[in-house]
Figure 1 (cartoon, rainbow, N blue to C red):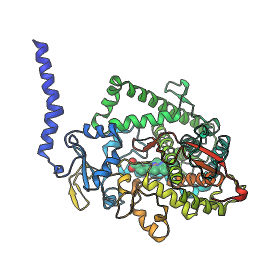
Figure 2 (cartoon, rainbow, N blue to C red):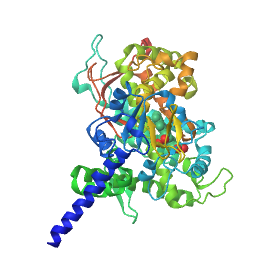
Figure 3 (spheres, rainbow, N blue to C red):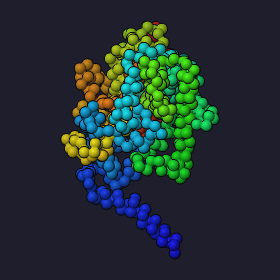
Figure 4 (cartoon, rainbow, N blue to C red):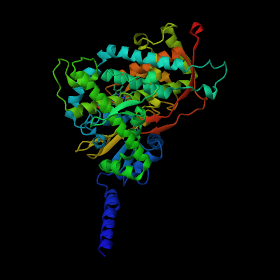
Length: 524
Ligand code: HEM
């Protein structure tokens, strides 16, 4: 009898909490959000609606399709997505009163890092501390590290070269698809950021693998199977469940108990945490031994006058973690994407080669940054690729201030989540005509400069990317060096890369045929 009553009571409580209350809130509509169409029938009532979108497809693509007819779409009970570039300054601009959303707090660890700290004052403190390390004046210091990684990339690529594709052929023999450009560009950025940030040589490019040592909090050292698998699994698992922010901790703990695929992803996530921890402890040991190294870790420990920053160890680890994460995957995706676009648009590749060949000597293997940094077409190719396939596609969630805020000329009540996906913004046909076409020319000259306010691959405003300069340096040197030295081919002209969306637009393997160009008769 008691059991029956208890079950009935539990049923009523659960029903009220999960169905009656949200439905009542939806109908009550205190913020007036019912005036906006929903991404799916569930989205106005529960965050399960957006979680379903995350599980079943590429959210940003669906938003893009819907935004063609609706400027604002409700993607959660308290969350709006915008489709017009005119919303950028209202949400992300320097004068916007919006802050980062609770989304970031849900994902944070014991300590905030530069990218997930919400409090504006705390963010300003961190940003000031890191800005001298990330400043443009350090470019010279990073350049030789990037040149070193490019040399190693080229060595690996040389080892995978095949004979040139015969004249007129566009489809290589499948056994010639020996070089996974996606994997190697990721090895490149991982090796580069470990060197720039921590003065550590990971050696992934040399080994052609991303096996790495990790360390548990109790000091146990072990080999983590794959750096990338850890990083990518973490992102995938988070992107499936984070949308119900207040349930994130509960879900991350219990969803794993129900679904084996989640268990696997969280296991890989442990590997990721352990490898970050090991990088930090190793670097700390060098710092304590008195080594003065010119890297980001040094900037975390001391200001430029050598005064200690006295950060808690948890904060140092958090900063190392975001540096290794944000500093690698996004740039690797950008390198992958521009290569795919160029191979699918051979006329653009030819024009780029002409530009690069004109400044590099035939025997030059690693493009000196000085020679290629101002090449307009090269930069236009990078930006056009970042426009049409931004590495970070998800709408970066911001929260309106408690008193509310005007967005796209409409008043939005306080504490509402608002966002605009770069994937959507960059397809606004008024600013970017023929948005699906890879057209680097749109970035050239004065007209190109006018597009900059609408280019949000690195976000904008006070929370814009701090690593942008490093990323352009890496992308520019690698792309110039590769197109100068190699001929490259996709598996076939209509080939499409496997894609899925986390916070980034992720990409599966990119198997390519590569061969050395004959630079004595260099023609594009
Ligand atoms: C193509 C390459 C890159 C892209 C597309 C990119 C994109 C972004 C975006 C969209 C944000 C805003 C995130 C948000 O609001 O949630 C961001 C912030 C950030 N990025 Fe990048 N990023 C790139 C490269 C890098 C690199 C190389 C580093 C480090 C070396 C880096 C470190 C950071 C950090 C620390 C933040 C947080 C900044 C803050 O809130 O003050 N990023 N990036």
